[in-house]
View (spheres, rainbow, N blue to C red):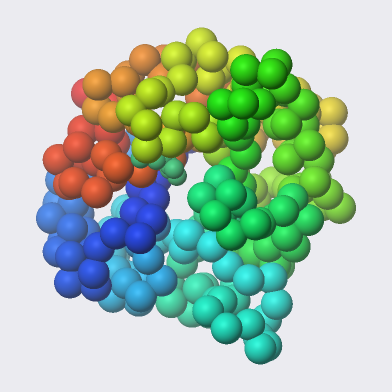
Length: 251
Ligand code: 13P
C-alpha cells in the first residue's frame, strides 16, 4: 500500500507571519488525518518559523529547492544541510518553474537529488512536458529523458527515499487540469520506467504525485486513479480552507 501524500507548494507566497498563521490554523483542522501524509513547502525565509509552529503535528516540512554543494560561493543558494537544519524532511527538486525560469537541467536535478538523499531528505522530483511537447507527441520521450537524467547513478536503495511528481507544464497555474485518465497514463509510464531501472518492487512502492491546477473540486477524481498517489498543489494550497478540503479528499 502506498500512503498518499498531499503537499502544498507555496512558491514565492507568504511572509513569515502569514506562513505561521496558516499552519496554526491548519494544524487542528487536520490533526486526525491518517489517510495521507501532509506536507507544506514555504519559501526559505519562513522554514524555521513554520518548523517551530508545526512541532508535534502530523504535517511535514519541505523546501522548494536546494543547491548540491554543502557550502561555497553560491550567492542566493541554500544547501541540503541548511534546509535540514531549518527543519525540512522533504525537498522539491526540478520544478518546472526552476527548469524554465532558472535554466535548471536534468544534470543539475541529478546533483540536487543526490545531495538531498545523502543528507537524509526525501526529494520530491518533478517532471512534466510543456504544451508544445505534448502537442508534438513527445510526452513519453520527455518523461523518459527527465527521469533518466534526473535519477542517473542512484542505487535502488537511494531511490527508495524518493517521491516523484508529474506536473504537466501546461496545467500549472492555468486552471487547466490534466484529466485523471491522462495523468494516470503518464504516471503509469513513470512507474514502468522506475520498475525497469530500479526493479519491480521499486515500481510498486514509488509514490507519484500529480501537480497542475489541483483543487477541491478535482482532487477526488484524480485520487480515484490507482496510479495517482497524491497531489502537489500550488494555488489552492495557499488558503487553509481549500488546502484542508484537498487533504480531506476522501471525506
Ligand atoms: P498550481 O496548483 O497553482 O497549478 O501549481 C501546481 C504546481 O506547480 C505545484 O508544484
